[in-house]
Image 1 (cartoon, rainbow, N blue to C red):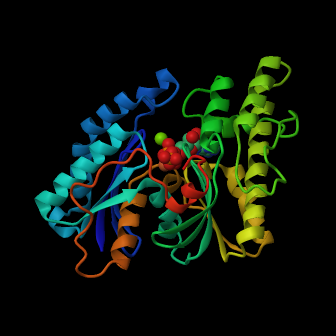
Image 2: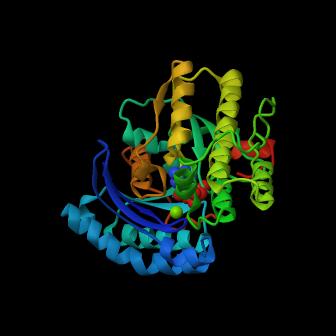
Length: 345
Ligand code: ATP
Ligand code: MG
Ligand code: FE
């Protein structure tokens, strides 16, 4: 199948045309970094407005680049949540209008499902099941991915997401927004052992993540004035990575084994994170997949791909999601997990 995908849940406006054989026919992405940078974070109102202004020309450009019209696509997929609701609505409403006008099925995609399935767009040999570390700006979860639409959450954060911790660390170090890549760059010049920082929940039999204590410790290290910023950045990154591998070891111990370890989400762009996970996977004789950087951070190819995956499991008479599908600010990939435990989805 051929699916048109739209992403607008945070501060990236993105459109992509993806085919079921993993070919990205055309794509466009516009970051709003410049608009939000003065505020040190994403301002929802500004984001929604920018999505609304950019989406239509980007849709035209992508269709034009591919030399195709809406009549050629099999479905129109858009992020329907979770995310900043104004932005999500802009993308979802546009997709509904296109679906209606072209008489094509609408696919209301969970943004996290886009991240979760993105490794399969990058790696044709990656089969279900796999153990997924989903590390992004709003989420830090370990999921057993058993199939399309079959996600079992094994761990989540009880406070901050890791991307958030990277962004806050960057802010404390005066590196600006977005913080993750800046912290990674500065850490290259630092000593990861220089600053003693906690590894929250390391060694605990409780399966979850916690980064609030690490963030506070970074604040104290900055305020003490005793450390070089590069050492703080490197030590923070090292502590974070050790938390990730420790929690993954526990997940493997309690829910494993898995044939493959996969990382997705914006923090998966971090090379130290990728390296540590690759080592962990090798130690457990697991296949390791990390999507290329452009597929880790928010993009529309992953949304279109999630649409391809859904079409592949639906029957021939599948008509798509209802045109009155509502945008969702919160939307758990594993709804059962929240019944068990109220921690952030
Ligand atoms: P979510 O997907 O949870 O809704 P989001 O869409 O805002 O949140 P992503 O775009 O997937 O998140 O990821 C953005 C996050 O990834 C930011 O917090 C950013 O700092 C972080 N990030 C990006 N690149 C890197 C990197 N090289 N190292 C560490 N963190 C990074
Ligand atoms: Mg972004
Ligand atoms: Fe995301």
